Image 1 (cartoon, helix red, strand yellow):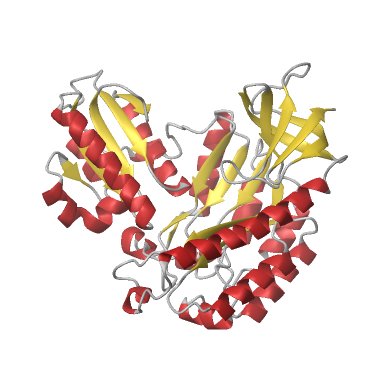
Image 2 (cartoon, helix red, strand yellow):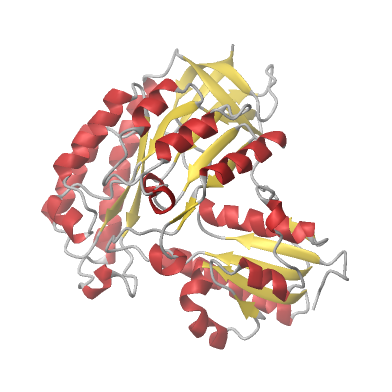
Length: 435
């Protein structure tokens, strides 16, 4: 076993799943690096140790995780790696089954067992590394996890089974982490949680998201701040004036509505009606003029009829979200919905999802064409072939639209802001020239 006596032992960390998993991997890698390991992220080639941080959210994610584990198990058989460890959501949920089926894995760890994983490789968890992590995103932006777990009873979701109940980070800790990242050159921060609107209830007895936004936006060097995964039920309305008044809080909100049929919202146990949902979304648009709303939808939940789906489709057509994604229902054991018959055929689930996405493609195309001729502030993420590629405040990394500026005759530094005049558009991209 590699311990701290082996100063140059190498560890390759593989991350699967969402941005919350990515933060966990960055923290893990920060601990390993502080313990004198050579650490890489998803690096090809041989390593002494491979640690796979898995996702277990839906069927496709679980399959990707299992295939990745099997691939590295084979690499261990071939002698390309010495030790193989698995952590994260899949390991938390299916450890007992998997450890019998894949004996090549040396040890399995749950989502909250980082200290145990570190001890396995000869290290003690360093509490003094608050905010220190090995960032694998471009230096100029970072994801900041403000809480762990979830207390919501959504019928379809297995996250509470894998991540436990909601636990908020203290405001001071979040501020310290962001201040630390600013010192390393980070200027854009995505606040993430399974349910960001619940923030503070467990620690302070009341929702504290508005205060958290104020405190974080006051940190010198924070240029852009954006909020993800805002649960619509019991949305804290005091957040909206803070977003409207603070220039470094992006006019952007990720708010997963999931459905728009009262019948389905009740079956999904979302704690909100279609009427209240529409009123909330309208209040958000009125309170924060020009805000870009991203949402996530779920189609094919048990009991979803053609009429239920049509209500959802009509709502998307009428409301015109700026950004939108769709999942098809996955029948997850030990969830409330698993007690119901999975009665929507997979082919119909995919057909409904494709129908929504084609509608959203048309909406996005129309909204983008309205931006031609306008000037936008853009943060540039990378040079890709013949283009500098960036984003507006209305776009989060990886999931949203991008702005492309020809590299020929133009120059910007990655991580810098620039003004761009939009000259062309496609449904999901904008093209422009530097001003």
